[in-house]
Image (tube, rainbow, N blue to C red; front, side):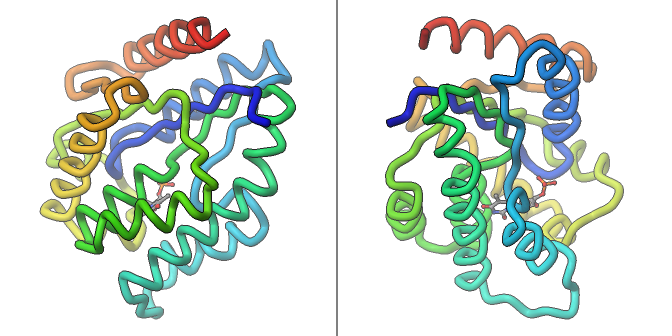
Length: 208
Ligand code: TMP
């Protein structure tokens, strides 16, 4: 039975999501061993191998369908090894990307059926949903120019990132109780960090 609190952080490539996740780790982890910081893809041993295949192997041609199934394989292992056990122990999880990324990237941007992705995802997650999803929204023109060590997906370019962003915004509209959007375009890293801390405090208090 799920007793903990599950937070996901989402955004396009270069949205500053991982920087914020690292900052949270520094500011929150010092005070608590009740927190688990994790990410997708690549948090389990299997996931680390899948991450290399998905993001670093320029020589490997993956169909959109195969790519989708590898992200799902990463997720199912991640849930079994890390997420479910932590939630059952009553821990708070802060996860850098989860299933909304699959809907936005493989669905909205790659063009696979969103209905089928949601169905497959519900099967492998056994309907596990985050309690809070924070979407860091930024103009893709800005975010793409920010990211330096580009992965395979970032090489898809601006039009792709625009579709990813539209995807996240559409999901947010259909799930307003779970989603919080922070527009980071004109905010400093520190200002975004404070907003995220406030949201986590507000939402996790409500839950307790
Ligand atoms: P990141 O760790 O820097 O966020 O990079 C992960 C990349 O993987 C990013 O380009 C988005 C992509 N991705 C998908 O395409 N689908 C997914 O389901 C997930 C979790 C990530």
